[in-house]
Image 1 (cartoon, rainbow, N blue to C red):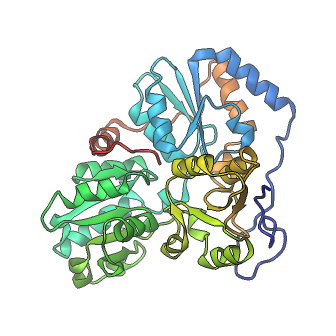
Image 2 (spheres, rainbow, N blue to C red):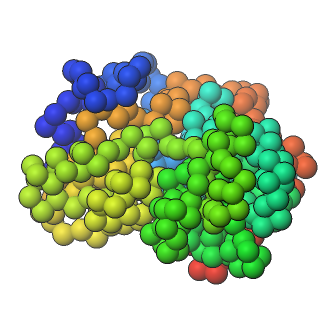
Length: 390
């Protein structure tokens, strides 16, 4: 048996008093507005041939994924793009920070295209460069900046990666966050980490992988003076977590985990480390998107799974594994709204413009930002283990 709908509210059709106010989930995504778009996408891709390389993030719609040359997570896709130096155009079906990373890692003559410039990332937007620089000034005033090593999640803007590069820090993915933190703490005898921008990945890694306690972690709120923290709290902390989160993963709740365990015998809870700490503690397995995919692929027939990650991927896994019972770990969480801005009309528009000789929506990182972001990325590449999948 295969299912992706909880026996509660089918993707927002109805009202759940416990759900986040102001958030509406319209249900299943609509079909492409024009049936001819599929054929137009095929024709444009064929006309471009080897000149174009299309990347599709796991969270993309099926209507877009079908045209991807490779699928994967953000850093894997950026590295795949770098591995295709002969491709003139890299069409990145993902979000803005991913396209930035592809531009940083590809050759100067390659052009990275984001089909819809509105496809951003709410998590990445929660850490703006001005805010982080102000926080660094506050850490300096508190007398702790010399001990702080900044670590930024891959899901951050190029200028935040560059900030980490300039200040002795590193980039990490959800797969190698533990290795990145080990590296950071080894840089200074009294090292503290400023972890950007996802507090949940930082907390889960620090506590569950590094052996730190919750008391060792403090949360820096960029909307409050001095992050809402005292100088003493900053001096005592080993992990300074930026107050950011994923709008999808951050909404999974421990209550739903309990409901699923009560209603589905032997269900295994499989979640992404961007989930809240309380959810991760209740899960059976925690890991990156690639880990989630491989776990389901290796699972035995007849097994039951509740997966806490983006719904497009959960639905795709359910369709690919009809011999397993796969349930989405929530009642009302929508698809990733920004990721889903990359739809078939935008993809067709971008590729048909390329066929016509017009480059649209090119993502270009300025040379200075690229230089320092690449420093932070290279530090990650030099880490032992080389597990960089998001």
